[in-house]
Length: 437
Image (cartoon, rainbow, N blue to C red):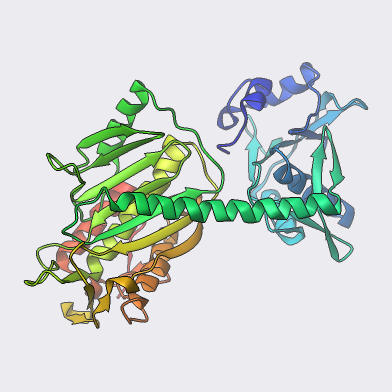
């Protein structure tokens, strides 16, 4: 839970990923009181309707407020101070049960982590770590209707009708801010990219703001980080690094003030933009300089590479996770009036789609989570496939075979060179590449 507050870190005496059984037991030793972001439960939530509703309400209340942690296995006195530690049974089945209860009784389902804390064996404590949610308000199912809990000091109450209305208004404003931010990032990138090639540009805007410091040390760490992130099938020389207002940038240019080959800008709040050229010796401007040809293999490769890099920045540099808005767009070469996408078919043959005007290129948007983009299974490929198909549909193609919705790749859709690059990239990026016949 990247949003674990410094206040709670001070109370526990450790970052959440480092909390031990001794740290939890110290809560009782020190008689730590419950607060707006800290709740104690002596035992696991039972399976009665009342207990299931209590679990759903406790999680939703924190998500609707400032976020916080529910500690299972710590009892409190009448003043809400931790007094006892009675370890609870830990199991995958129990964690799954709690997740299912929240998923079945809260709408929309809030993001939260269930963290077992144990020195070994099957007993210990559970930490239910709930970040403040940009998707608030979260309603709890009560008597066939929704009610909206919120923390009020160390207790929980339900929102009034006017508070619920205000929370919904804030949710809509937040979504609008994300969309506006994504549009501004892409518009700003257009003036920084070399004009001759066409580019695939993508940006990721997290719901919650992260924090990356702009310092000399931070800049040095950014330079080292860009040398280690894996690219797929594009010029990966991010050798020119710069500092701008609330962001670091890197690109493959030399003397030209504009970026060549690849462009990356990483913002302090976790938002980021990645762009790479998608025209090369096989797909460049025609002699007249008015038509730009693209290759579907290049689009797919850049998309996979960029999505992973954007998510890595959010998690590793800005320490933020959770839902995010993804926007992807083809930016045609400056002189190109139309674009042609050459689509691969079995046996390595290329089928040109009908040419489309540059005005036909619209952004593709998707709601994703940063964690999904960083999973090592097929999830990244499934997300990328959905975006790639939408890009292909702008060229009149229902699907592009390079990426499939089940996350598998067919060797006949990729050249031998690309197959080798994909395998190596999967190894470096810790992404599972599954080939099917």
